Length: 314
Image (cartoon, rainbow, N blue to C red):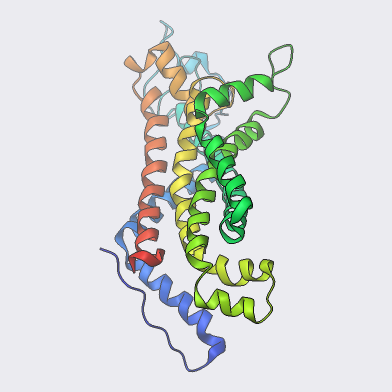
């Protein structure tokens, strides 16, 4: 159940932002979904950041092959052991190390992609919602046209166009995936912000700012944006796991991050393609569980943030 924000009325006006921030932080920390989601997210991020340290400790790089020790005499990957905590894959690579690097890469792609989409979508939504008229119709039509394109098919086409004659990508694959994901994600932020701006532009405080001579840019930046920021932040946390799944989907299909670079998507694809997960289940379970934890953690965090920060739920 969501809890209302505490009423803050400090006697000193300058202390109000600090007191309000402290009050919101206290409410967030009392929200079970926020605590659970934050705990999972912190653990996942810490594990991803520690990937180089773990690799150095085990002596296994993410692309190194240890066929003599990681494969049996029949060529089958070994299961979990002290040397290989999650066992090895069919090429003799450490699944545990690759899983950590895969989570690291997924976050490094999804975080900037979602943030870029949020910035672009928020700017377009503010302009469309506040100006209205022809600007709103044109931008709304652009949003609808973008949403009409299927993500997977269009992404496959865009990434294929970015390949050279020899089949290699002319752009860094991670950068290309960030751009493709952001290209499809901004529309959701734009529709959200447009709707919120339409509801706020006729409010008395906005009209009062306009009557005092404030320009459009100042009204958008100082009056409307601070009021819609909580909803935008919540939606950023909602969209982030969706974009992680999108990155994993592209890598699974072989058009995202390419092997031998470790990605959760191409690791799952390798396990499914070789069927070695029937012999060594952690070959599939390692990246699968990591992807599950990332999605559950951010979904739980966004759910709690929505209960606390969304003005319509207070």
